[in-house]
Image (cartoon, rainbow, N blue to C red; front, side):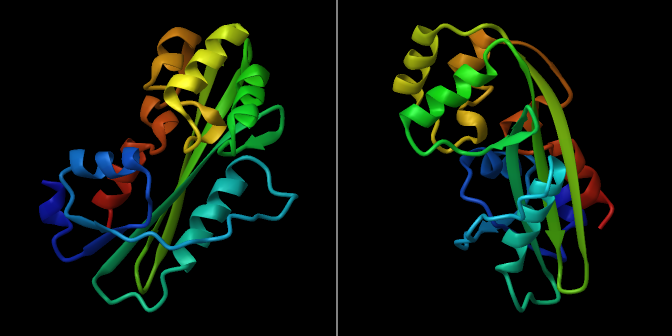
Length: 192
């Protein structure tokens, strides 16, 4: 249904995330993957969704000279805790520190999506509140050792063991926490 509507577009997903790629497959979109290295640095004064909007846009700017029928979709996700962005941990110590800090607290997962053609661009974002139980050091260490969550904002995946045992509730889109607010992407694609 959606793939027919978008048949005039050559869709490019500008993401190496296996979760985002799977969402695109599940939406039955015909797409190619092109990942361009971008230095993900943003102005220090940006807050919350301003950061992810900026980074999704920055990633889209790496794609220059788009053809008339090309649609590039880029995205960025952060965990927002106590007015600070938690990005992807670089190592076990950073992942441990992030999960320890989130333990017993609410944080927000914010994802922005940029949809860009040669003639237009739209950026949308979504925020989901996630409530962690008090995690023990042993639970955190077990998770990091067995799941290596270094490609995930905030150092965890909701769809993995830590999500099963540690998340008490969420308010908002589950799929947003996985890295893509699919309902918002679908709506924007319908409106193209």
